Image (cartoon, rainbow, N blue to C red; front, side, top):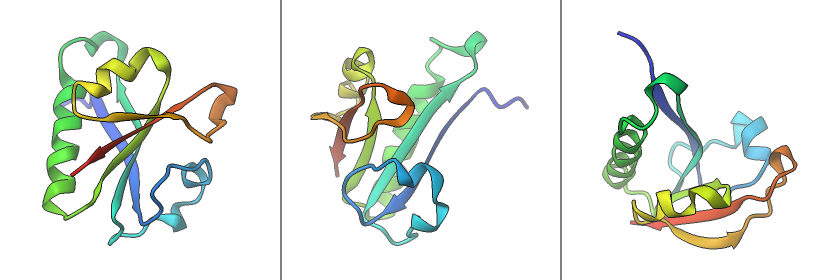
Length: 110
């Protein structure tokens, strides 16, 4: 009965994740081709138990059921290998400057 992990994002026809998507919910398009993932979050005491991975797999399956072209996320370099294990491909440094850090865009084609 306790929320310990979640994945958040939006759907759009825009193929690349852009910073304005975080701030403008009106950019969400229910019929969009791309599932954007803004964050994969797990409370600290529940990390390393597989919850986030289960949710990522669920997000992938849901995107397939909904007929999306794929999923897109950004992450820091230390997590590239984690998302690669789910089939995401590193497309290089993102245009995002969210939080004034370097982000890498990753895409999973369905």
